[in-house]
Length: 215
View 1 (cartoon, helix red, strand yellow):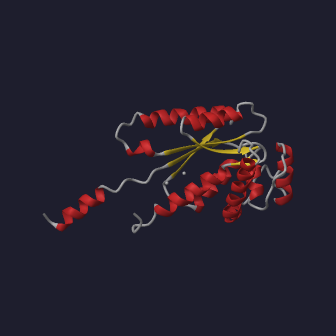
View 2: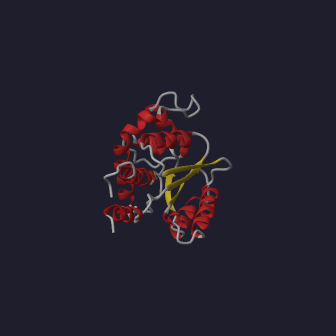
View 3: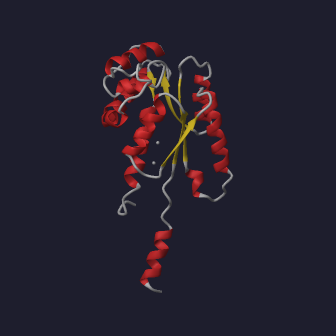
């Protein structure tokens, strides 16, 4: 048997890289942020799925379940290992806590923000531990990013993402604080978007390199 056929056979056993589907509200800041994230980690792993209709937590989770059920029908397919992430905010939605618990029950990964996505942007700049509502967080965001609200929630997210590690550490510390206080990790203020971004960074680091051999 030739050494070339042996090499070819070994190469075919390398599992394909898993993809990360991100379902999120298709308006306001989230799309611009995630497209900037995609530019920062350019690989085919990230599959952005903006939800154009109501971005309520239950609607986003419902779309995730549809995708998850579809992948589950692909017997013996590597796509069954693809990851599905539901990204949503608390805001004034009563379905928030149930959506978080449904994700955990159905093995859908969740990037929540309570009260809103702007908390994640604030954490790119500073720690924030005060229990707040959406308006209060948005005002804090406006202080850190002048013109944010007036400009239709548009920012240079490519620049902001440079502080990604700091935001991840601050978000993790927030959840740890709630845990130490014996509180639910998703009470205000809290976010798990750091789990999503760190996951993308790890998978992206492995994908582009030929010399390189997961939440």
